[in-house]
Length: 379
Ligand SMILES: Cc1ncc(COP(=O)(O)O)c(C=O)c1O
Image 1 (cartoon, rainbow, N blue to C red):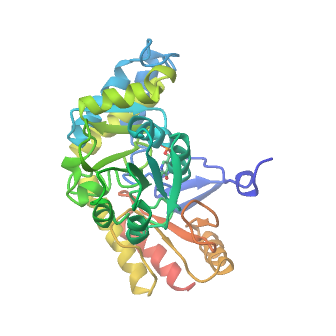
Image 2: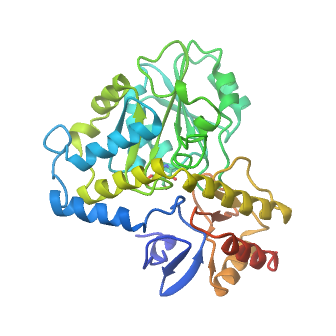
């Protein structure tokens, strides 16, 4: 049977953007993840249509068979360019990214330590690794340090940025906590940081100036850093992405069997995604605009005395009183034509849930101002 939240899911009747048609009403929309605002860009849609016309719906076979269509290879080439890596592996969903990382990296006789509040797909990937699995307290490097003691090879898994809260992982502190291990692998899901954070937009590890260390093979002594994500959030396309060195990606493609045992991403999706990546690379002002909007939203929320997460992610999950109060704020904003989703349950959330605010590069200052003014009157 479907859960209540699934049955009640709203109907999206337009592309996500600052103004979005949902259940027949056009809202000023601050939900979801289309952070760079590319889902409705005409060039992206045109490229998707053109790819479908030329290559059909899909290749109907895996990459190792006849699934290597030109749009799929173009996504990999453009993603490698964007992330500044030798290569990139593109697959149908970011949900699979952590399974691929775990399959490529799980050390024989090792232990997986996973953040207890990580995204569902991180927790599932940890279990699918076939290793013993333990959890450590959410964003708690001291607990991580305690838990790794006495364990030989450890694979540590977490979100780089909380999907519903926006809280970034304390990666520097995790690296310190793991420094005593003879061998450790820190695997991060940066679904929400890719395209948003860092000087080059490569995500949370770019912002921390750790990018040159990621996704290399063979992994050496000490702590090895790995990160994967999705093109379906900021980057304006669809599908999972793993940028990295050629050797590491050869390993990821074969160890996970996603290359040989799953259909390649559909042609239209790949064509649109390749165009979105081209736009993100050639229009850095999109990321600057997003950053300004993130600053305006976060600054406004802070001025109301709310507990705004650290960092500069495009989404923030904020607890404002109890669940009933947040539902009231959600409903009253909605009645004024402004949609800010109330997340009652999602991985990584406190029991009361949060109001999750997402801002896009395409929101205007005035639109964010309208949200803040309406919110202030409801606090
Ligand atoms: C942290 C995180 N990882 C992975 C995913 C799944 O990515 P995709 O939507 O590309 O399958 C999500 C999506 O909600 C997410 O929030």
